[in-house]
Length: 272
Image 1 (cartoon, rainbow, N blue to C red):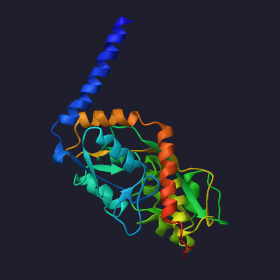
Image 2: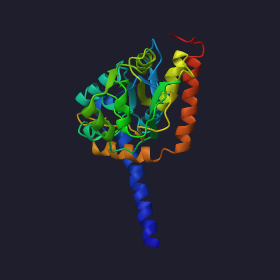
Image 3: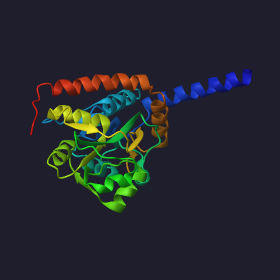
Image 4: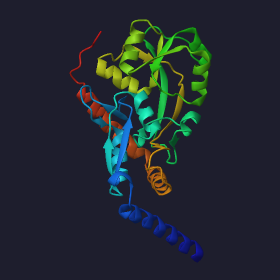
């Protein structure tokens, strides 16, 4: 028992020392880490139309975590999800918010930290145009649409590469309009993102979600393998801090940012 107490005390001491050391350590780019992300994924991360500033659950969490080691976070809105991934892949920007983990992305980004929240991807269709969806093969009967470079898990991505039945567009709003004009039968998107976009467009009740999910998986904040911030001590720190995030904390942030998003779009009239 005494030995266990000594080991526990040693572990705590080492953990505290590691954080103190990072506060004083020489870190890249004069202690500024560059972060980009999805500009159209509320309440997790988004930018208000006409503004450059990124906001959302993931933005607040990342700022809070890096503040503990006196690191400034510079958020850069590069306008599209596809470009955000390319900038981090190349190492021009250090961290990406909030990609799923896939085999392809493991070759580009360091996923050392745990997911900060779970996310569900679903199928949206126009109300009255629902169809049977039990397997991915059921989707082949109709044309679909989704955002460029969006991943829906390794299994679905491989299915999509084989069948090429989904048109890719830059934004969720464009995808909804594509379905509304009957150029596609369904849209694949995150539940919150899709519902929030319908709010922004004034289209609540115009679309419904099919019962079966495409995937339920984690959202991450990986660092580019080419970034100078991809260091063992930083990755260990992030792993520790993300493991400390509690579902209740995320739930409160979700309520907060859904309210902010709805307030931004409170006066939106239905658009055609």
